[in-house]
Length: 270
Image (cartoon, rainbow, N blue to C red):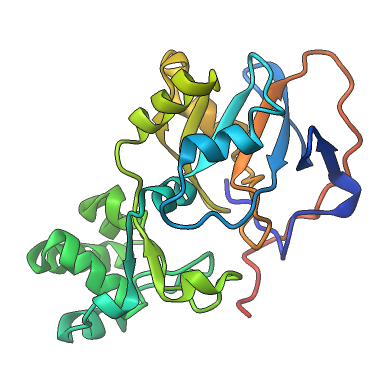
Protein backbone atom coordinates (compact mmCIF):
# COMPACT_ATOMS: atom_id res chain seq x y z
CA UNK A 1 0.00 0.00 0.00
CA UNK A 2 1.41 3.40 -0.98
CA UNK A 3 2.05 6.00 1.74
CA UNK A 4 2.68 9.60 0.63
CA UNK A 5 4.16 12.50 2.56
CA UNK A 6 4.81 16.13 1.71
CA UNK A 7 8.35 17.40 2.26
CA UNK A 8 10.98 16.45 4.80
CA UNK A 9 10.15 13.85 7.48
CA UNK A 10 12.80 15.11 9.93
CA UNK A 11 10.69 16.84 12.59
CA UNK A 12 12.83 18.50 15.26
CA UNK A 13 10.65 16.96 17.98
CA UNK A 14 11.78 13.50 16.87
CA UNK A 15 15.51 14.22 16.70
CA UNK A 16 17.86 12.38 19.05
CA UNK A 17 21.62 12.18 19.30
CA UNK A 18 23.70 9.35 20.73
CA UNK A 19 27.45 8.80 20.65
CA UNK A 20 27.80 11.74 18.27
CA UNK A 21 25.29 10.37 15.74
CA UNK A 22 21.99 12.12 15.00
CA UNK A 23 18.86 10.13 14.22
CA UNK A 24 15.11 10.62 14.01
CA UNK A 25 12.41 8.51 15.62
CA UNK A 26 10.11 7.12 12.93
CA UNK A 27 7.60 5.40 15.16
CA UNK A 28 6.71 1.77 15.82
CA UNK A 29 5.64 -0.76 13.21
CA UNK A 30 4.26 -4.18 14.12
CA UNK A 31 5.52 -7.01 11.93
CA UNK A 32 4.70 -10.67 12.56
CA UNK A 33 3.55 -9.89 16.06
CA UNK A 34 6.69 -7.99 17.12
CA UNK A 35 6.95 -4.24 17.77
CA UNK A 36 9.80 -2.59 15.90
CA UNK A 37 10.80 0.97 16.63
CA UNK A 38 12.57 2.61 13.69
CA UNK A 39 15.40 5.13 13.81
CA UNK A 40 16.35 7.01 10.64
CA UNK A 41 20.06 7.79 10.91
CA UNK A 42 21.27 11.06 9.44
CA UNK A 43 24.51 11.15 7.46
CA UNK A 44 26.48 13.57 5.33
CA UNK A 45 25.79 13.52 1.59
CA UNK A 46 27.59 10.36 0.56
CA UNK A 47 29.70 10.92 -2.52
CA UNK A 48 30.93 8.58 -5.21
CA UNK A 49 33.82 6.36 -4.21
CA UNK A 50 33.33 6.36 -0.45
CA UNK A 51 33.82 3.10 1.48
CA UNK A 52 30.41 1.71 2.48
CA UNK A 53 31.89 -0.30 5.36
CA UNK A 54 33.47 2.85 6.81
CA UNK A 55 30.25 4.83 6.35
CA UNK A 56 28.32 2.17 8.28
CA UNK A 57 31.06 2.08 10.90
CA UNK A 58 30.75 5.85 11.38
CA UNK A 59 26.98 6.13 11.56
CA UNK A 60 25.54 2.74 12.52
CA UNK A 61 28.11 1.07 14.78
CA UNK A 62 27.68 3.69 17.58
CA UNK A 63 23.91 2.98 17.72
CA UNK A 64 23.66 -0.69 16.80
CA UNK A 65 22.45 -3.33 19.26
CA UNK A 66 22.35 -7.11 18.71
CA UNK A 67 19.05 -8.05 17.09
CA UNK A 68 18.72 -4.76 15.20
CA UNK A 69 18.03 -4.88 11.47
CA UNK A 70 19.55 -2.06 9.40
CA UNK A 71 18.16 -1.18 5.99
CA UNK A 72 20.48 0.69 3.64
CA UNK A 73 19.38 2.76 0.67
CA UNK A 74 20.58 1.21 -2.57
CA UNK A 75 21.57 4.68 -3.77
CA UNK A 76 24.20 4.99 -1.03
CA UNK A 77 25.76 1.66 -1.97
CA UNK A 78 25.79 2.53 -5.66
CA UNK A 79 27.39 5.89 -4.96
CA UNK A 80 30.09 4.16 -2.93
CA UNK A 81 30.63 1.73 -5.81
CA UNK A 82 30.61 4.63 -8.28
CA UNK A 83 27.97 2.71 -10.20
CA UNK A 84 26.65 5.85 -11.85
CA UNK A 85 26.19 7.46 -15.25
CA UNK A 86 26.57 11.16 -16.00
CA UNK A 87 24.01 12.86 -18.21
CA UNK A 88 26.73 14.21 -20.50
CA UNK A 89 27.66 10.61 -21.39
CA UNK A 90 24.13 9.72 -22.55
CA UNK A 91 23.36 10.68 -26.15
CA UNK A 92 19.60 10.81 -26.58
CA UNK A 93 18.44 9.29 -29.86
CA UNK A 94 15.22 9.30 -31.87
CA UNK A 95 13.55 6.36 -30.11
CA UNK A 96 14.16 7.72 -26.61
CA UNK A 97 12.71 11.08 -27.60
CA UNK A 98 9.74 9.46 -29.35
CA UNK A 99 8.82 6.79 -26.79
CA UNK A 100 9.22 9.09 -23.81
CA UNK A 101 6.28 11.15 -25.10
CA UNK A 102 3.96 8.21 -24.42
CA UNK A 103 5.41 7.11 -21.08
CA UNK A 104 3.40 7.46 -17.89
CA UNK A 105 4.50 10.38 -15.72
CA UNK A 106 5.73 9.22 -12.32
CA UNK A 107 4.94 11.72 -9.57
CA UNK A 108 7.23 9.88 -7.13
CA UNK A 109 10.43 10.39 -9.08
CA UNK A 110 11.91 10.22 -12.50
CA UNK A 111 10.23 7.87 -14.96
CA UNK A 112 10.54 6.85 -18.58
CA UNK A 113 8.98 10.13 -19.63
CA UNK A 114 12.51 11.51 -19.14
CA UNK A 115 14.33 10.88 -22.48
CA UNK A 116 17.73 10.56 -20.79
CA UNK A 117 16.52 7.78 -18.53
CA UNK A 118 14.83 6.00 -21.42
CA UNK A 119 17.99 6.29 -23.52
CA UNK A 120 20.01 4.85 -20.65
CA UNK A 121 17.56 1.93 -20.52
CA UNK A 122 18.04 1.41 -24.27
CA UNK A 123 21.81 1.45 -23.78
CA UNK A 124 21.54 -1.13 -21.01
CA UNK A 125 18.96 -3.54 -22.47
CA UNK A 126 18.99 -2.91 -26.23
CA UNK A 127 16.40 -1.23 -28.41
CA UNK A 128 14.44 -4.41 -29.39
CA UNK A 129 13.59 -5.25 -25.79
CA UNK A 130 12.62 -1.66 -24.97
CA UNK A 131 10.36 -1.50 -28.04
CA UNK A 132 8.71 -4.80 -27.09
CA UNK A 133 8.26 -3.70 -23.47
CA UNK A 134 6.82 -0.37 -24.59
CA UNK A 135 4.34 -2.10 -26.91
CA UNK A 136 3.24 -4.59 -24.26
CA UNK A 137 2.99 -1.86 -21.63
CA UNK A 138 0.81 0.29 -23.88
CA UNK A 139 -1.54 -2.58 -24.71
CA UNK A 140 -1.87 -3.66 -21.07
CA UNK A 141 -2.59 -0.12 -19.91
CA UNK A 142 -5.69 -0.16 -22.13
CA UNK A 143 -6.97 -3.02 -19.95
CA UNK A 144 -5.97 -1.32 -16.71
CA UNK A 145 -2.83 -3.32 -16.04
CA UNK A 146 0.21 -1.21 -15.21
CA UNK A 147 3.87 -1.94 -14.56
CA UNK A 148 4.25 -4.39 -17.47
CA UNK A 149 7.06 -2.36 -19.03
CA UNK A 150 9.23 -2.74 -15.92
CA UNK A 151 8.31 -6.39 -15.51
CA UNK A 152 9.72 -7.06 -18.98
CA UNK A 153 12.85 -4.89 -18.80
CA UNK A 154 13.78 -5.95 -15.27
CA UNK A 155 14.69 -4.45 -11.92
CA UNK A 156 17.99 -3.04 -13.14
CA UNK A 157 16.05 -0.59 -15.33
CA UNK A 158 13.31 0.16 -12.80
CA UNK A 159 16.07 0.82 -10.27
CA UNK A 160 17.66 3.64 -12.27
CA UNK A 161 17.54 6.76 -10.12
CA UNK A 162 18.59 10.29 -10.98
CA UNK A 163 18.47 12.64 -13.98
CA UNK A 164 15.83 14.32 -11.83
CA UNK A 165 15.76 18.11 -12.13
CA UNK A 166 13.46 18.42 -9.09
CA UNK A 167 15.75 16.47 -6.75
CA UNK A 168 16.63 18.19 -3.49
CA UNK A 169 20.27 17.40 -4.29
CA UNK A 170 21.85 19.10 -7.26
CA UNK A 171 24.15 16.13 -7.88
CA UNK A 172 21.18 14.05 -9.01
CA UNK A 173 20.05 16.62 -11.56
CA UNK A 174 22.67 15.33 -14.01
CA UNK A 175 23.65 11.98 -12.49
CA UNK A 176 21.91 8.60 -12.73
CA UNK A 177 22.52 6.02 -10.03
CA UNK A 178 22.22 2.39 -11.09
CA UNK A 179 21.40 -0.64 -8.96
CA UNK A 180 24.22 -1.66 -6.62
CA UNK A 181 26.52 -4.46 -7.68
CA UNK A 182 26.37 -7.71 -5.68
CA UNK A 183 24.14 -6.37 -2.87
CA UNK A 184 24.25 -9.68 -0.98
CA UNK A 185 28.05 -9.44 -0.90
CA UNK A 186 27.84 -5.83 0.26
CA UNK A 187 25.71 -6.91 3.20
CA UNK A 188 28.02 -9.85 3.93
CA UNK A 189 31.06 -7.54 3.90
CA UNK A 190 29.40 -5.18 6.36
CA UNK A 191 28.29 -7.98 8.66
CA UNK A 192 31.71 -9.62 8.64
CA UNK A 193 33.51 -6.35 9.36
CA UNK A 194 31.09 -4.82 11.87
CA UNK A 195 28.63 -7.50 12.99
CA UNK A 196 25.73 -5.44 11.62
CA UNK A 197 22.77 -7.38 10.22
CA UNK A 198 21.69 -5.33 7.22
CA UNK A 199 19.76 -5.31 3.98
CA UNK A 200 20.09 -3.17 0.86
CA UNK A 201 16.71 -1.86 -0.21
CA UNK A 202 15.14 0.17 -2.99
CA UNK A 203 12.35 1.98 -1.17
CA UNK A 204 10.02 4.82 -2.06
CA UNK A 205 6.52 5.95 -1.16
CA UNK A 206 5.03 3.30 -3.48
CA UNK A 207 7.00 0.13 -2.93
CA UNK A 208 9.94 -1.53 -1.18
CA UNK A 209 12.24 -4.03 -2.88
CA UNK A 210 14.89 -5.91 -0.94
CA UNK A 211 17.95 -6.25 -3.16
CA UNK A 212 20.37 -7.93 -0.77
CA UNK A 213 20.60 -9.34 2.75
CA UNK A 214 23.34 -10.21 5.21
CA UNK A 215 23.89 -13.95 5.87
CA UNK A 216 22.18 -13.70 9.28
CA UNK A 217 19.02 -12.39 7.60
CA UNK A 218 18.78 -15.03 4.89
CA UNK A 219 16.43 -17.09 7.05
CA UNK A 220 13.95 -14.21 7.06
CA UNK A 221 11.73 -13.66 4.00
CA UNK A 222 12.47 -10.56 1.98
CA UNK A 223 8.85 -9.50 2.60
CA UNK A 224 9.55 -9.43 6.35
CA UNK A 225 12.37 -6.95 5.87
CA UNK A 226 10.27 -4.90 3.46
CA UNK A 227 7.39 -4.70 5.95
CA UNK A 228 9.68 -3.11 8.53
CA UNK A 229 10.00 -0.04 6.30
CA UNK A 230 6.85 -0.28 4.18
CA UNK A 231 6.00 3.36 5.03
CA UNK A 232 9.43 4.48 3.74
CA UNK A 233 10.85 5.94 6.99
CA UNK A 234 14.05 6.97 5.18
CA UNK A 235 11.99 9.61 3.40
CA UNK A 236 11.78 10.88 -0.15
CA UNK A 237 13.05 14.44 0.22
CA UNK A 238 16.31 15.90 1.59
CA UNK A 239 16.34 14.04 4.91
CA UNK A 240 19.83 12.53 4.42
CA UNK A 241 18.67 9.46 6.35
CA UNK A 242 19.70 6.53 4.10
CA UNK A 243 20.05 4.12 7.05
CA UNK A 244 17.09 2.93 9.11
CA UNK A 245 17.57 0.84 12.23
CA UNK A 246 14.58 -1.37 13.12
CA UNK A 247 14.70 -2.56 16.74
CA UNK A 248 12.41 -5.08 18.40
CA UNK A 249 11.36 -3.31 21.60
CA UNK A 250 9.05 -6.04 22.84
CA UNK A 251 6.61 -4.69 25.43
CA UNK A 252 8.82 -1.74 26.34
CA UNK A 253 7.35 1.74 25.89
CA UNK A 254 8.29 3.46 22.65
CA UNK A 255 10.12 6.75 22.62
CA UNK A 256 7.97 9.87 22.24
CA UNK A 257 7.18 10.39 18.58
CA UNK A 258 5.37 13.15 16.71
CA UNK A 259 4.10 11.57 13.47
CA UNK A 260 4.17 13.26 10.11
CA UNK A 261 0.70 13.44 8.59
CA UNK A 262 0.31 11.24 5.53
CA UNK A 263 -1.40 12.54 2.38
CA UNK A 264 -4.40 11.02 0.64
CA UNK A 265 -2.48 10.89 -2.63
CA UNK A 266 0.83 11.78 -4.26
CA UNK A 267 2.09 15.29 -3.47
CA UNK A 268 1.80 17.86 -6.24
CA UNK A 269 5.02 18.29 -8.23
CA UNK A 270 7.02 21.45 -7.49
